[in-house]
Image (tube, rainbow, N blue to C red):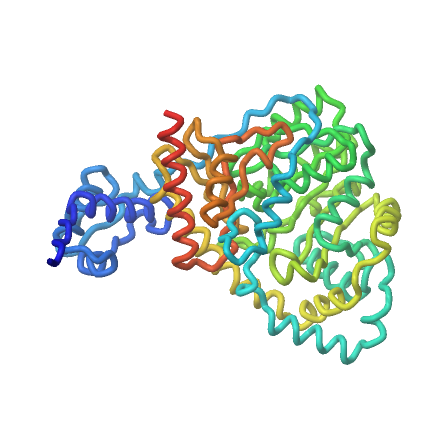
Length: 484
């Protein structure tokens, strides 16, 4: 005997459609004044009746999200666009502390290579988004025409042609540096390690953004230094007033900042704030270590400038790499050490003597041919779309009260979960379901941000990625009920 199919709950269907459209509005995917999808288009896309689609739009109109226009359809109301709030600014205590992150970073990196896990925890670009053909062609060309140089050690400073290309790019950003003022490193992490060791010693206090990238914290921990968390705004970055007060009260040896698309916040420091930051630190003879690894990945506005451009004393050490754009595996990083060049060279020699020659020469050729700029222009829009879609999915599937950053570059999202939800427990439960995230406590030396997670939008958007977000939303709702 054939079993009768259970009737579909029309009320549930219209609410589901309503949530999806509302998430598009909250995330900015549908902007103020823009026309919402037609009723027929929405009905077809969501697989619901025209009546259900109309019911969803009428609910959104009642709540002030949409307005209907005769013979024209539904439009996003300007006053309600982007209702979703970004995470609240941090409120750290101005007390230096030791860094104790534990083993969770190692666990996250280990599962990143597991094909059975959707890795949203490690901020890596997907291999599908890398310029593999062009870069491999440049590598083959170098291996063929520069056979001996590609097999020999480069000088500790790095390949001359690569340093020349980096100096040219720095000049475009307002920084006048000669190639012999550029130091090539094995990735940005090594550049940061060299920078820290060039300006500070064990026991010194390093001011950092709150939250900040966990590998910066691990370097501080490894070098026996102390971290001082500084309040950071989700949109504009480091709170300069809070930093100034800390500098007056604490003997800060150096400041580490990510002005362009902070990881994990995605914040962008305005140019006048960068100038003020450099001036403030120069007056106190405090070095600034600037991490610019995401600077090339601005979504819409022009490429933001470097803090280094305002440096008149040589105390700004800019660090970056090509790992987030070209090829993480090539490990080609660089730094502009300023007045600390000699000490930075000594540190580099003792750490790794020289970086691999072939990847340096290949990246230099890729830059020289103009391929890098063409590639970055394309991939920026890809990351912008992936971030927007992931943000909309989080707002749709996570519980009410969830806050999500709204970055203008990079490819990470900082998610504040409702109070009472333990992000470490979410990490463990999600991993058991084949999804990895980065718990917020990793981004603070004092294990703050326990109800936060960072998500990476480095993977191409797909049903698999959207399914992972739905899984995280379901698990988060379960943890919320448990904590109630």
